[in-house]
Amino acid sequence: MAEASCRLRAGQYPGLRHGWLAGLVLLLLGLSFLGTAAGATTITDDRGHRVSLDGVPARIVSVYPSLTEMVCQLGHCDRLVGVDRYSNFPPPVRALPRVGGGLDPSVEAIVALRPDLVLLATSSPVAARLESLGLVVLALEPKQYADVRRVLEIMGQVLDARAQARRLWADIDAGVDAAARSLPPSVRGARVYFEVNAAPYAAGESSFIGETLQRLGLRNIVPRELGPFPRISPEFVVRADPDLIMVGDAGFAGMAQRPGWTRMRAIENKRVCVFEPAVADIMVRAGPRIAEAAQAIARCASGHLP
Image (cartoon, rainbow, N blue to C red; front, side, top):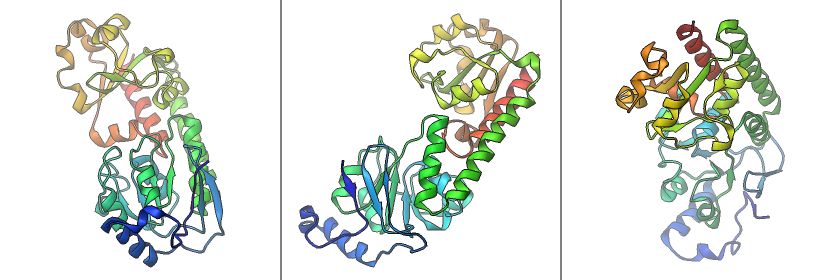
């Protein structure tokens, strides 16, 4: 398995001998440092790579909103020195330098921030490039409830915040349970269509959103075998005729103009929950705010179903 180290030694990376970017890495990493609140640790990330850390990273770049939120929820927002363009919570991260998106991050911008650690998703195209330049990369991509718990535990280890990570997960789990208890019995079993975007892509049973619906006692019209976030035909939804539709406000425009949709019970009876952008962000992130997402879904179902 590949192993990354926080220590950069002369001659360790032959690719650093040439190019202005490589020289910049050597210069800036020489000025960087790791906190010493915790001892050395080695973590296996979601690529199967073993990542070695000499202590708690003092300078972190996060290129994935869920990971950005985890760092902050564990009390270490002050260690973030840069984030991706979609990381917008908690509010203090909005003032941080932007390094591009998850799929199009700027290697130069990341290097210039002198990070001790770069957090990104396994789907990021720049992990190998960053590692070839001597940066320490931890690739984590939570997709299910179990992943959120596991990644929280890993981040607790990285940040020497294990107890906080355990408490945070306990609070999340309790929050989802409380959302489930808030639903009246008459709502349980209602059939729901959750649209992620207007392509349309939907949240299937195997997604973390699908897990939330299940824990709330709601039924997802998109079966597990279609995958977590499948692209589906509008006709599929018409045939399923859900009791309730959930969608972000950007995806709601034009929904009623889709062929056959005005005949669906949810449209006819105005049983459509349209989430504003800030709430929609919570809904689609497998991170520390999934209990808030569960509560928003519960409010939607309680307010729109008989």
